[in-house]
Length: 190
Image (cartoon, rainbow, N blue to C red; front, side, top):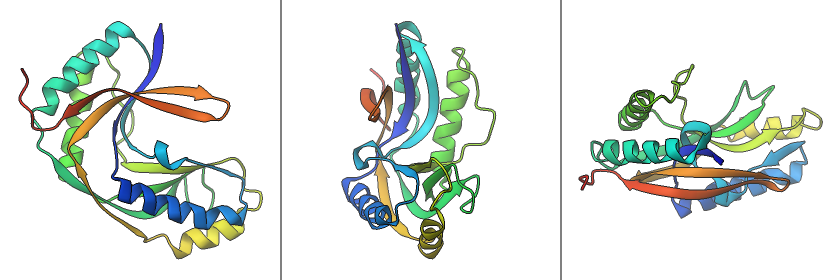
């Protein structure tokens, strides 16, 4: 049996609340978007896709080893932007300020997982938290104007002390996430 999996960093409750308040201020604009529920906000370090149990166990062992090589660090959540652009978005996100520690962690995950057969990502790591998926641009103009006005919003600093191997179950009500395993940064492997 396969499971849809990814590697993530969780955010603090304070940041989750701050982002949720911002999203709640945008919802009345009635754009045709699907907002991410606050409990689902996370920073995806690597999407893995559908994997069987044996591969998931290999990934867990790899993450346990590599997490001991990285110390805890902080990330700053700042800005609101979109892929492909704020004017014509598919995804609306909260950005993560450039972090050498996060870049190093993501590169190490990418490299070490490639050694056990996980395909490397074809594009550069672009850290962000998805806050909405745009269904269509119908009635989007008021939201676009508001997003432009708050595009430099600061959501604060988050302590990164662990990475998590997550499962994603797609349901009619949206994705449901479950933590499979967590790996503390800087902990020696026993």
